[in-house]
Image (tube, rainbow, N blue to C red; front, side, top):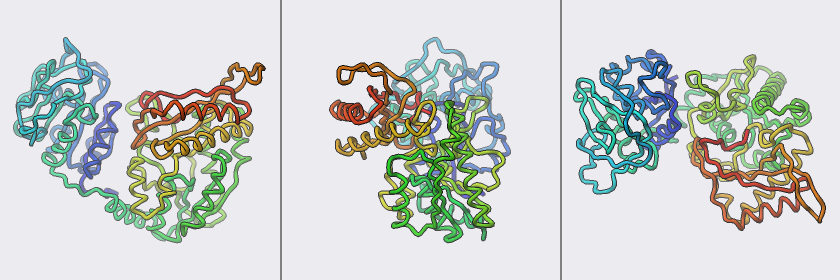
Amino acid sequence: MNIHSEKIIIIDFGSQTTQLIARRIREHKVYCEIHPYTTDLAVIKELAPSGLVLSGGPCSVYEKDAPKCDAGIFALGIPLLGICYGAQLMIQEMGGQVVQADKREFGKAELDITYYDGLFAGMDTDTGSRQVWMSHGDRIEELPPGFEVSASSGHSPYAAIRHGEKKLVGVQFHPEVVHTLIGTEILQNFVFKICGCSSSWTMESFVDTTVEAIREKVGKDQVLCALSGGVDSAVTAALIHRAIGDQLTCIYVNNGLMRTNETKSLLAFFDKTTHLKVIDVDATDYFLEELAGVVDPEIKRKKIGYGFIKIFEEEATKLGDVKYLAQGTLYPDVIESVALGGQTVIKSHHNVGGLPEIMKLDLIEPLRELFKDEVRLLGLELGLPEEAINRKPLPGPGLGIRIMGEVTKDRLDILRLADVIVLEEMKTGGYYRKVWQSFAVLLPIQTVGVMGDERTYENVIALRCVDSLDAMTADWSKLPYELLGAISNRIINEVRGVNRVVFDISSKPPSTIEWE
């Protein structure tokens, strides 16, 4: 069901910043979604986008196996913005020439604008820096018929181009990254001035259209909702409950992989603050048996995902004629779980790649097109309390993927104690709400230490704290040394079996937030 009358479609060629393009466009309250370059032209036509964006990518357009979309998109009459690789592909497909540059451009560059309309409308009175961010080893050498230059840089004579009659524009730099100081204005001009969109995509409008779509799909059938207690599943339940009321039954599965006292506090929260029907299922023994001896993270995720579905289907049978299963799947889950044009899947999320093909229940995933920060805004729109909205994220597989190697009761006990200390010290130090996520990871190694003048050979805890808005990109949190010292000191002194604590200072990308 096409519920967005206005939308921008991004054709993805594998850039690490493709998701940022979608985020920046959505910040202007215009709906935007990402599709792989292999998407059929007929599908694009059916989506009826207000505009198209061709993303950047790691390849060169003149390579033999370079990724290419259907060239028919350039003749659709739809406004189109090519970014870096996307711009070069447009130029080559329409008769121009792209060559390997004598001097590559990576990093900051100053843009010399010569055409103050289209992408650069309103910038003729701007006296600020025209700094942009380049990342390419190729350059446009010759423009196709009908194209003209809009801006240049030191090593790119065609840093921005436009067609004289058609709404086709391109830039050699990346307007979606913060280092391009005029990037917001460029994307704003494309979305509003060139594509003619309006700022109509809000959480209020999302609720209205999604509630209508859920009612139309479900009819009078019954729905089960996988309720973990995190913000994603809580918002999913609240949204579906608004749509179908008592036709919704929530199931909370305690997989034995939750944080300390989390199950108890979550059930108390749902009992006191919501009107949801919640069934509590304790499946601790089942999941620990399934995970015994398993060390591969992908197998872990799939076993946990299969276990959830198995239990949901058993509970559905007890309830009678239940047709649908609702999940809090987010857009980052979908993006990371789907391979692009033969590329490798980053990881299978338990509620995407971990689902067995034989699952009998049909899926409802109302948050599937939202980023995490948008889900929090949606929760506020639905009237959920702050306790539900700001709970620290815990992935569906729980602590099972924060234990590197085999998951056992003893190793879970060690990690839970360490994680409690992390959260307590983050709150005491005033950083619990300042960072996106903070947690402990139990590593699959042991190291030598000295405790009480005796040699020890015990476990290592890694501390992971990151700052993020949407979970698609993240940077490690710059915590004070005093706070890091307090966390390390308490873990080593209070958690038996641990003699070393390390701090993870990697960003996403290239790393992921979770370790598995």
